[in-house]
Amino acid sequence: MKYLLLILFACCLTFSSFVPTAQAFKDTNMEELQKKADAGDVEALTQLGVAYMKGTGVDVDKKKGAELYQQAAEKGYDQAQWNLAFAYLNGRGVEEDAKEAAKYMQMAAEQGYPPAQYDLGMMYLQGVGVSRSRTTAIDWIVKASDQGYKEADAFLKSRGIVKKSEMEKKEGEKKEEKKD
Image 1 (cartoon, one colour):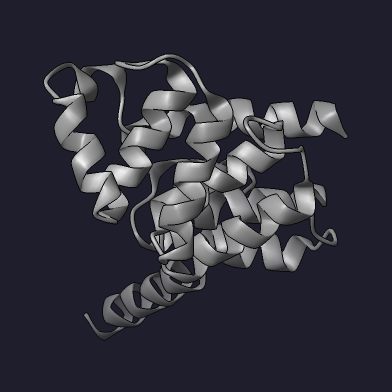
Image 2 (cartoon, rainbow, N blue to C red):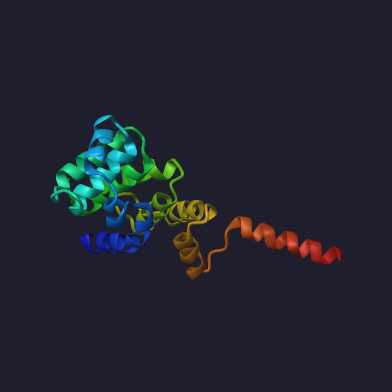
């Protein structure tokens, strides 16, 4: 089980463009970020959570990082929910809990956050924190793909899965060719 979680996490590391990186913190005034977080700004809470998880501008404190994600997640911030899901998947600052990870991944996915939709699909595909369901997995991955999420597109293509919208487009093109 832990092996599957590590694979899932490793696959999702490619999505770092959605999470603030060390470079993003280079020009960030940590005091200003803390003030915004104290005022309840969900982006600041999430960025500060990342800082504590990575030790960027502050000492590493994974528990505090997870707590900050939790605060922003409870306010409905999809990126914080996604980050918190990974904290639960890997036991970073919280006790490892795949079901809790799935809960937060689902929250972010339902808000339309493409990385969460893709990752939730992968969780369903592997049965991590949820009952295994290929149909549900593909549905979530297609939702991410429909928003232009390249990893989802690549996954579907690698499995030879054609989206309904693509099939309809091809059928429309065939009808147009017959008219000509």
